[in-house]
Image (cartoon, rainbow, N blue to C red; front, side):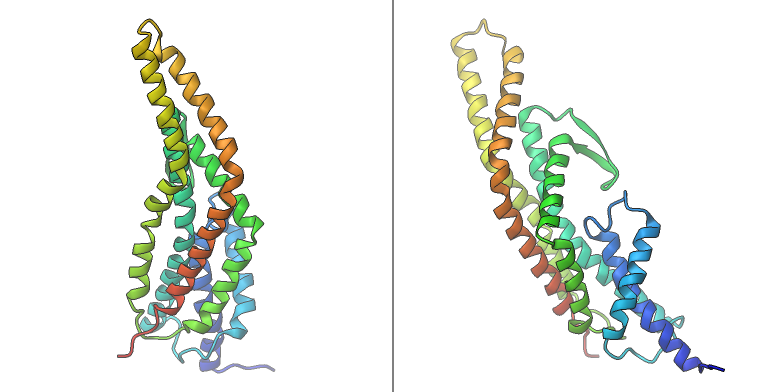
Length: 264
């Protein structure tokens, strides 16, 4: 008959529960994994599957009762850390979606909005198109596998411990959030500049021929020019998107290495 002592049973539960909380935190916030269209059962099952694989690789854990106050504190810390790592990657997709929103509004498609279940808000059609393009590029470069690999490495660079997390990693995450506005504007700038020139040309044309109906010809022209510019610029998005993914992976690694436990 196989018997377990209470200490051994607590070690078995903690060895699976604490890594699981970090894994589920990343799955909840990371792109693709955290998509609302993915069933919750699939997310939890994937989290359990990854945790079972990761658990033997995790360094020695604190000898604590997982349902004690310190055990629950570790549980919450690991979940928050996983959320931060997943959110760092999600910022890239938000930046690309912002670029599409800027292009869509300049084209005159600001009215073409619909409810986005991922962000729980309104999203433009061009923004969603750019986001889908970024998702396909992310899968093409095996970004989801690199993200899982980075998660596994984080258990070695930032072991599970009772000490509180340093705020430097989360401060870096806050600074990394500026990528949404900076990169979104950079990605949209070439198309915005071309559309601005188009609007200036329409203004000059209207000034030269006041009998022309600017509202009748302006909207089709800006739409046509916008779609042509998107089709021309789309093949060249691969390089900046790959660079953005690399920077996001570096941000995730930074959070899991420079958010080390503090010495009390």
